[in-house]
Length: 537
View (tube, rainbow, N blue to C red):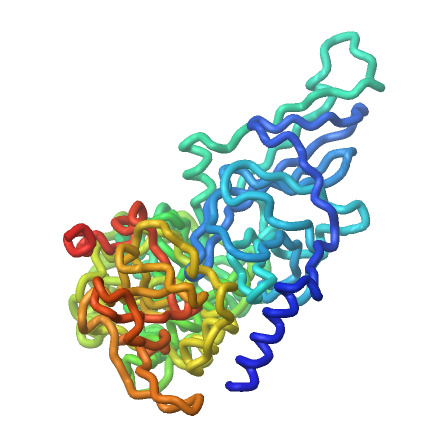
């Protein structure tokens, strides 16, 4: 650890004196940033322009919102951020990347703003189909701030014929100004928040009925998936190797993919890989189908969290597998519980499903206790987080490595120390609260933060005396007092006796990597409104 600190100090000095510089691979070209965007394109009879929109997703500690548009025209390909908003940070760049770890990417230049409409030209030699994400990446610390998955089908698509934009008699060799419609209306924003998930949990009559009761679920369709045959029916889906599944359409502003995984676990028998209650065979076994790496990691995290609760004696054998084509079941299977309530209720009671759910989950079956890793502010169904930390279960190291950045993991789990002056919150003076990056438990108010000149965020006291835990620390050949979070047991930093005398004399010297900042305007959305009285006292 001492060697790491020495290397970090030397690197900081060298960068500070200009020995090393960081330059983007490609130059960013500014387009018209006022909506609606206008592109001048050379036209011909058959030319079309396709505009697709993808939602921008934030990551842990780095909320973001807006959409990314991919515009394809004869003048070239362009990436347009619309209604974009994120937090600032050091050395932020926009990448086209094949992964979310910044391993294989093309840089489109430095991030030129954290709010508004921002455009980037994609170099002509770059084939965008080779890349899966557009993302904002912090080169200083190797941290992913936000991303848009451009490998999936665009949420909105407009095909505009250049011919249609011409007036009668126009010369086809002239260029035309084609307006790109704005996507800021309420209906379009609602459409962009809709997502789908493919899930299996035994008899699709029961799965469909239970999911339709979940707030945020828009539609549920029963069907078949996972086999080798096309157009399966109720008579032959088993022979084709299919499972009974449901296709769920949900509002991602209200519900997360992780919430759906938790629901599947709590409303079926996740311990049975050979069937579901009285229905035997793998065609009835539960399964989670993921569409991308984010959903895969999220599903595994939820399963690991449930395993840690020891609700069941053995690890869950719940299948997590790539998403496959879905085939809708016959109409008489849709909304079966409503069309045939007597038969449905007799079947459900006899199956033992409800008895099983009540035995293992009781009243908590319909409560989500494992919020998503990549959740938008306010998307958790928990209305207040007060006292919820008592039940926090720390995920496994494998889950934490997937959830946290390398520096966040090193600091919180390996007692590391980040570079001074080059971290996220040293100079942050916005009003709000700082919470544990792992658990979300509240730690410090911004009103108790001050500039200590050390290069790390410093506070005169925690939110409450018991919000943090103190330990003696004899490393680095000196005696210090370590500060750790109460429930997640994250290493936060150290406390010293050289703080402002008129404010208690303490200096809680924290690592930004161990914290997540929530602005006062977002506290209510994220369930921290109960802290307002303390914050304003």
